[in-house]
Length: 187
Image 1 (cartoon, rainbow, N blue to C red):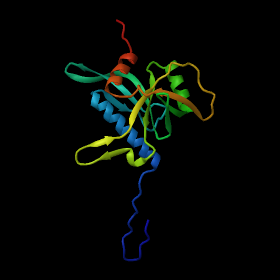
Image 2 (cartoon, rainbow, N blue to C red):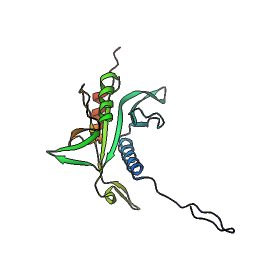
Image 3 (cartoon, helix red, strand yellow):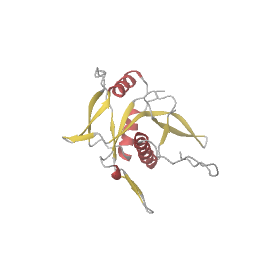
Image 4 (cartoon, helix red, strand yellow):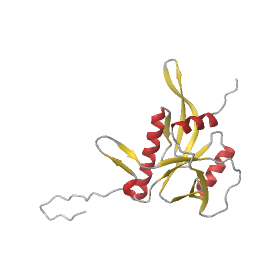
């Protein structure tokens, strides 16, 4: 903040958000845009209560002419990072051990499955997104990861995961994931 003399107004100096928050917001924006493009409903979980779930893919139905939310197809933990590599057609990413264990715990004990969405950022931050008067373009890709493993990691910091490059999170994969994870109602 600039100091004021006796006759001037104090003007705060503008600052930018931290790099980690910027990266997170880019990931959230991209994920929201991809899901909105499919017509499905993505709901942000409560930011104050972060228990390892960032978003939920919600199931909507038409009941008496009104849309109603009746359940969750699957839950999402979103990670956005430029710390990844590609080897043998797989994205190699060091996921926090806590997050990996959360996914295992959730999928082993929860009713609704939890998947990881990784937004793969370029190393050069100038390539993350671009915009002009005609378009906004995210120059990155979203990939999904799910495991049915029941073994948590004993690693203290990271668990290396591999995501096939074919597991792009897009319109087609969203429909397939919903079909795979939706809860079957038996009457």
